[in-house]
Length: 527
Image (cartoon, rainbow, N blue to C red):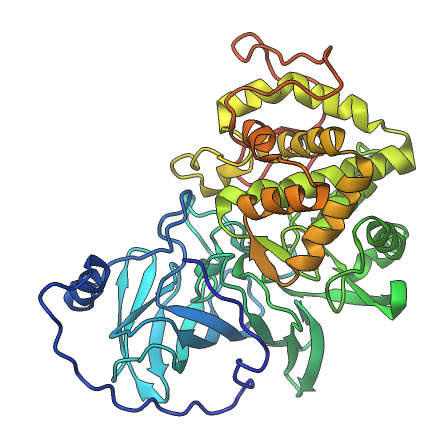
């Protein structure tokens, strides 16, 4: 489902009451109606089933019939990270169809009650969906508020990936690609972004930090409640909540940007030399693609073993050990920091329209990671891209072309994060720059993040913009690079050869992986 953009004027103010819709007049339906309407009527009376917005890689993610404007999440943490948190999720949404019931993605936790527009609603489970039947039918084009009281359980079975990450001293979140709905009920697809307000109550001695800026803190003798709010819409997979015995460090970035980092309290001196690099890295990225797109930024250095880093919006998640293990060279760690920072533009501010568009996020983050290493540490971009070209046919055979990745492996939903969407996708950008020239390429990058800011965009959108900016017909050129089973010839590099996938084994650089995913050449951990 492609959703139209919403303006601030259309959104209800957080906490404002919702007027009830006027009773809908029942209409007689002609026998010869369109199949779409007939299907809607049949679905309304059929047994509850899991739905989806038609994502090729995750068919049951997201739900049709409404567009979320705002989430209000409240979590109460007991102090034990192996116990369920008490939680309340409130969703403000605008309906895009008449709805007798609606589906929310929610896969893990106990639901105590659901209220729709102030009236108790019935609910049931269908697969990984929570199916809600309000007391009155919701009319198309009306605002509705859904409040779910539930638990949020940080303990999962071996088949569940993502969600809450249990750290040494508390919890953090890693919801990519389809795990936000194991933490809270939501419309769990990046095409439906919303403003978030997040409240966390924890015992005295703990610190809670979430996406956006802190708007309130209330303390009592036994507990403290922190409230954070985003100023820009966010995809559910980018939500972040940190609860731990942490220290929050503050500094200033470019243009007075508030930068705040969250680290284990005992590690402040150890980690500060890395943290002080962030303002300079933001300035470097701004020099490439324009102004930083959000209200704050910072690093969450979690004392946990995840096997990845993650670009959670305004507060990127990192493993503490990435910065404390001597095995990783300094330039290498800094380039990982830039990878997650670059995602704030590519992946967060401009989200993928569907998960098949993931290459637009990971390919660009990898591109700027490599460019930073080239400019700051004399690690030549061309050498990395030549190595990627040699491996590209093998990556395409294993994971699919960059813009048509193969479906995740059974039981490993994050296995779409393969080398084809990292260095394989960065290779596409290298080829495009060679084809249209560096000047046009730089204009394209700035135009992409500027025109699509706070929204979601597709591969087709990128191709169209590339043609517009360059004044060239590029559909055929980019189609081969994005969807071909074989890697096309590299412009200006006739000597570059792709190795035969059947004869080449993985070798070379350190590896990275998504949780449960295969290794990727280029960096030890990252998304």
